[in-house]
Image 1: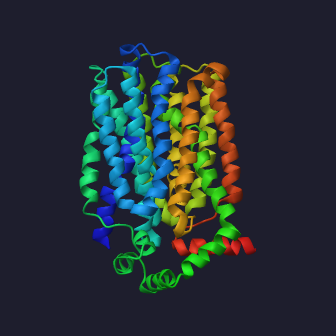
Image 2: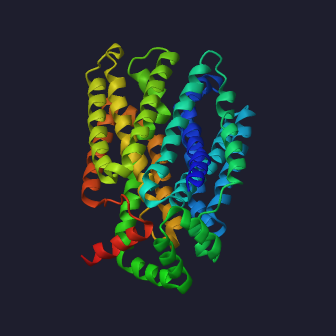
Image 3: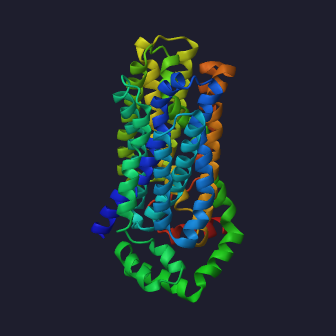
Length: 441
């Protein structure tokens, strides 16, 4: 089991790293693309957000495809899209080519955002599933930090082609590494490959759990149970999955990730290098706090981290709004500190926990498709937020925009408190049983 989990934990989360890097690298590259291509505000928003349209497309078909051909080949397909997108961006000499390259890259990112946490969840022992799935979120934060660091190193040269091209390296490593990893045992069992599935299940579950699940799959009981579960209890599961997916984005996190340098510029950091250094500091906090979250998830549970995280995000945004309203100078670093509190709270709470819960709450037979719906909603919200951020600042001012996101964070705290159950330590089958009992109650 240890060898299997180490292999999965090292290779599969590279999809998360690519997710983080490809979405964050635009923050540094945009400083130079703006001048090179004489970009308007709308064109900048398009260049930032078009990767999210690609992600919508990728997430839209990845769930169904992973249910049909398997989790493993779909992860490898995401690498192919990212490779093609990276090569297109390196060779771009026109805005249209940049947009096309970002779109293709986005398809790969969208596929990875669904299949990687799904694959890891289905290959994880129940008592370690939280930490293992959250490795994907940790990889996302590392990718974001790498995007900022590459931007920092290239500040003097302005080599945006290298910034985009770096993503090719982890894409190749993951593609090759996935060849040697097994398919998800849940997918194998649902598609009649019982002997191979049983061999894998026994590495991550007790013998009793394995025998019980295989028997259900063999006799068709699992399909009957699913039909009853769908009729009785899928609405609350869908509400929680969709709610967390959307709230993770509309609380504004990717306005910070994509526009960090612009935000610090508005806050009074006068040079590109000073703004990027501040962004790197936020990226480091993001990584370190996610490491804490990996350690805590299977100890303290999901709900406490969500509640603490949403409260911290609300406070951080309120203080950030105040710094802009009172025009507190950049030298006080209050804007940086408040953003760090906000990002750290996201990284310990809804950042990793949303991805984890949507990989846990759905029944086996629709997990891929239901996750596809949740992640499609996630990317839709992401797209809307990123496309409208600069315009929102023009309409509401910087202070008003961050106050608006703070109000949404406060609502997210209420949503978590009222609706989200604790799934710590439960098998995926026990979570299905929870929905039946909850509906009856």
